[in-house]
Length: 182
Image: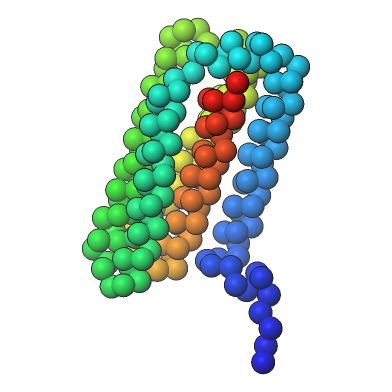
């Protein structure tokens, strides 16, 4: 009888887990720095936060969670021999990623129109760094989802869904801290 370790029982690829954990640590450090600096100027951070588009951010939360569901369903459908449906789900998940980026771009354009830059206040430095870095991950995730829709081996879909769920998780951490924390 052989014993299996916790690492052996992880679903998906080990290197994808290494990437996910390292990305979560980077975003976690950024959020900790954000909250630490916030302690030095809570009134300024609260005032700056009023300039955010909370409705768009909430909509983006629904968009990403829905796309994550579709990515998970794609894996299920591919494993149950519904290849066409799996591919459609991956393409739809990627399309929702694009919707997220369009909403985020509109938010950035609104800030630019108001003259709000990363130099306006430390809040906005963190806002642009954290949400921009996340948007870069969304863009990468869209590419990954489309790639695994094309090369739709179940292992590929699983790895792509792992990455996409990390993108979801990061947004679930960013949204309340940046947009809602008063």
